[in-house]
Image (cartoon, rainbow, N blue to C red; front, top):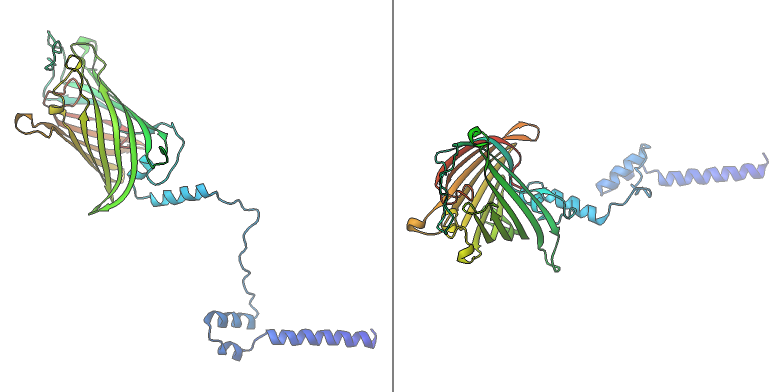
Length: 348
């Protein structure tokens, strides 16, 4: 190595050592630093600990779409809500026209009543049987119910449009002497407008308001035909494990000659309150209806349902009913009825 090269190398090493000495702090330098973070970094450099590299985004990592982020946020906000996921109250936009659970879906193989309606009748002409029906006090009952969403919004307003269908049957399965007939089946399609709300009330949160057009009939010919149409307004609230729903309705007037049951509102009622409490895999609900009339026209009903776990998604159900309107054919019969069975879907 020539003397010129050696001098150049020595000069370069000297410069590097000088730069390192300037960059490498002393303990005294570290002690003199007022900022705790800077002082800690100084000690790390002094003892040869490498500083962590700043985190950088992976250029190949997929970017979450904004819609997905909103959906995740809505789901997180909805963790403690019972009504939110059922009615898409927090901005969820699932596929339209998909079938979803609505009212309870259950099978009660055994129900018992204290009064058997062997002579169903209504005030309308030709709406009473001539011969008493052959019926037993024990029968089976089942209900199926679905809803679907038709539109997420209407005319730019936060109003969603839904359709619902509920069907319940009373089956005289233990009545072998009369060929085990289906005593009564009620069909209930409806069209619903739902408005999401988020209002704090004392002890409760108001979550939604609804307006629905409801038809209910038993599809029978005279003298057993029963039906009515209603315009129903309602609100729903929740608090912790509780849900409360209040509904009131106005019957759509029919011509007297077409009215199967002119006094149905005085028996089944004009207003309904339903309260439910959920804990774990259990649920207890109370439904109250009243005619909103006094004196001899003061009538209504009460129904209690208790749901308890059995296996997997299968739950047991105990149902107790007392009052008027357990079914359309029994709308003006006061009875007490009890049933036990299974359910696969509660109130949704």
